[in-house]
Amino acid sequence: MDDEDSPMLIEGRQMSKSVRQPMAIPRRFLPSMSLLTAFEAAARHQSFTIAAQELAITQSAVSRQIRLLEEQIGCQLFVRDKQTVRLSEAGAAYAREIGEALRRIGTASLNLHANPHGGTLNLAILPTFGTRWLAPRLPRFFELHQGITVNLSTRLTAFDFESDPFDAAIHFGDRPWAGSEGVELMGEMVLPVGAPSFFNTHPVKSAADLVELPLLHLASRPDHWERWFSRHGTTVGRLRGMLFDQFATAAQAAGSGLGLALLPTFLIAADLDRGDLVPALNAPMESPERYFLVWPAGRGQHGPLAHFREWIVDEAQALGR
Image (cartoon, rainbow, N blue to C red; front, side, top):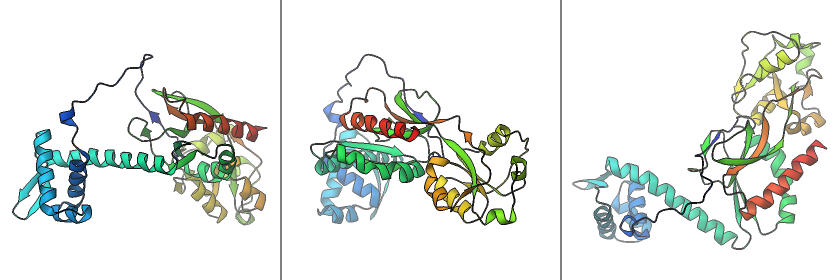
């Protein structure tokens, strides 16, 4: 999703109604942190020597820890060739998993260190929605909940709550999402807009006049122009034009006179007020998709998420009033 721009398909596995305790992993399959950090550094650098320098230990200590790890899990992780080492096929796969696991442990520890009392919300956002609508409103949330930290990460592609470390996400699209829960925030009205100078050389009186004009398209909404023309009684064939992955760049291109973009009015309100963008026609269209706040099933009572959900629903409702 740009946001908006690109519908984010949230996937997950269906959870049973009963809560099951995870099976304990035998201790022999849980290497110590010192072994794992030595392996991760050696795998990242493809060198025991550079890993030793990074960890401030000796090269022989790194080599010994890698050997202990290989013995513990019963698998060769590195291929030793004279004075060089390289990951084995199994080692490369293990390195990807361990690197991500250590990153998540580090992020969780950093979040707790930065905010030991209020809690943290890791939120995936749509880029333009996040910068133009959410970010300007966040100070009001922090005034109400001063102990909570909100970490924002933009996502343009589909992701799975089970593999991405998010507590929630802003989603634009349709229901439902297997293994996820959500609350509707708002809809949107889109409007064809361009730079004032564009219309000096491209006069527009009806929807049909737009067919031959340069149209700017969003990769996440490839059929929105066709929907708009259909909504306003104009039959079109295959439409061509520049393609963008985010609303912000499409809006900038439209404002620079490159063509007409079909954009949500609530995201370009400031551009319209300044006169940087003007409507080609007073001919809006309501998008069939909606904006949602979604979270993994069973995690809705996470404190920071519960507070954020209550707040953002109120903010979205205020927009519609």
